[in-house]
Length: 481
Image (cartoon, rainbow, N blue to C red; front, side):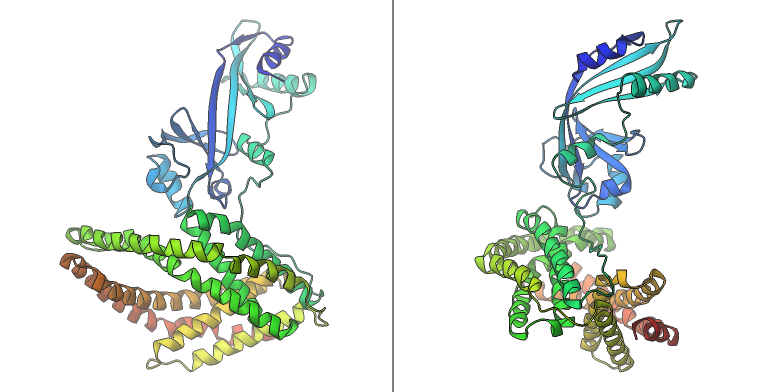
């Protein structure tokens, strides 16, 4: 129904006054993984402004001028207050990208009572390619009239109430999910199904995540595309190791090398992304008079990143990479049927990796080389991935406490390694920096990383004690034995 038709239909049953017809274009933004949707807000760009709306009520939460130039994507640096304050912690490093564009014509009708007073306001909208919408709002003190008008719209005029935000309907018309594209596994496995079939499901989901994030990585939309792609590759490599018994050895060895190569060709770019993401916080941690001295380092990192991006794009676009991913999908579906159930094999691998971690951790003392802690962290990732892959096979009261203690240990090991890596990276970059003030600022950061690394190491014993406690071992033995 067009706007004139909707207005005429309503006027047959109610005394109304009409405002002027308004027309406009709206662009709706969200991150690729739907962070605004998950946070319960909608970001609309129209008439030169960015407007933040509540998903449930449609209430305006904040509004600010839109960037002067039309951009294909927006980052937090492109947002003005108060929209920035509301969204900065939600989107973090992600880009806001257009998820829907809608052309709208609308008119506001005032419903009058017998005294010719406006008691309800109707907003009638039509959108190209989408259903028309009518929303009703009572003037304060006339809520009873709103009930009557709502009944008129739904029962007499058969105009359905607005229950889905316009942006969701517009996105749905494109066939895409309104909630965005998640990199989470969200797998539901049958404990008794053959391990080979379950593994194929996990591998298929991981490959789906890789495919989802491939275009955004090549287009360099934001750094999280590459991050999610690499996590999916790393998880794939982990499951290849843990479930190697159910696949032909020669074929699996080939694909293990291919995924190792993909991990390798994306590593430099990811490292530089992390350095650049961390740089604002590092800069802010310096004394005020030294903060600008890091600007030459930023330019160096950006130059190196541009080169790494070119190399990564070339490698990911190569026929070898495309063919490897296609052949891997076929290979995972063709594994011989396993006689062993997925729960049996998963429990065995979880228990084995946990016991290996306990043994490794018990051998670490104050004099152990840093490499031993790094290796423990790697094995911890293997365990974390197993718990994520097969979370649906175990009760939440078992899996969640296990993951919590593992995460505590992993976070501590991560801080230790990150500080060491950051210090080493700054030392490596120093020869390419010719500004003495920048070198001095970098030196201050290196000293801090070394101290933080030493502090993180002192926390290891406490974190490991919780992970390897008698209670934790008993839980593993009972549920994964």
